Length: 310
Image (cartoon, rainbow, N blue to C red; front, side, top):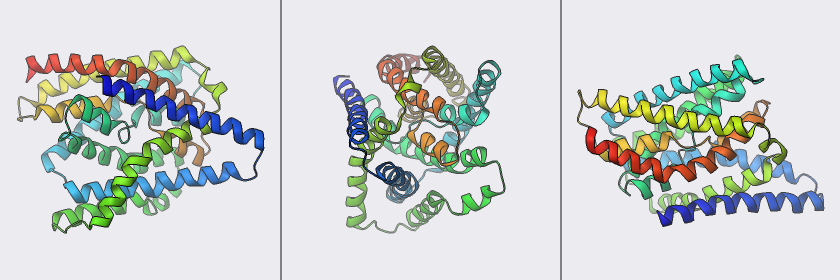
């Protein structure tokens, strides 16, 4: 618990550093710095993250049963996100594009892995990686389709590196090709720096005046989403366990990861497709605060419930 709380404080430290850097560079008025940061972040999301996912698939492979259950559970979370989105846009002045992505695609990569390590086990990170693969592939295909809603979709899909990295990684895993030591080293370096880089980007890029807009909505929305997905997950487990023998660590990992806040990639994609970033900014910021505060209690409750259901 203490390690997780310390890690949570580091999240806000990196965000604060990003905000301080923004103040400094706004004061200095350096030309083209914002464009450079934007292109750097797009490079990380578009190439570094796919590389990380591809290497992980190559290293650990994908168990078909685990993959099938993860896909099924992820579809359930997408349906929940869709229903919440329809509820929100009927009552507030938002579009479907603004709301659905930050609700549907969570921060399963750089928060998901430490969350799994702290509340499940080091071995359970394997399950989180599979969840990351499913979520990221869906985000950069179905998510992009929602944002583009045009014939550009197929061109974008064909030029999306994560699809190719995943296919290559899976193929190499199937044929049991040894991963070169250098690639493993690069992957370890990426694992260490990707979280701070993206959090600094949050602090630097956000227009902080938007964070204070509709605070109560974001808090209510995140709590409601957590409660609905958590309750649904228990029902999902009870139904599945009548047909399959479920690994307890697997169940804990995918449930906790699915409760995480919106991914920073949603902000990058929204900017790329000229979608208003006010809503996603609020979801990332307030969702992160709420989840980091509530997660230790949710993990404890999940552990108790699994004692009676598994």
